[in-house]
Length: 102
Image 1: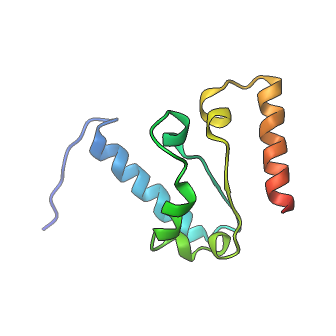
Image 2 (image 1 turned 180 degrees about the horizontal axis):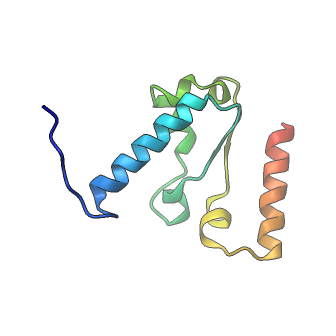
């Protein structure tokens, strides 16, 4: 028998379930590229360890993108904290262009 757990939208368990479902979908797509934003690095929650953490993930580390080294860890403050002004958008496009050309 399956238990049904009621949660309010936005509750921690709801967000966790949504994140797990999204991750499962991303892994199933077996992407050629992964573009990663380390929110903790953007908000002062620690160093940028996204690549290290992804490498330890049992499913993400098996994707074509990870195996081929096509993981772009973006400069978090520009993507997460700064608005969409022309200078910031230009910086984001330049960062992605450099990463893809490597």
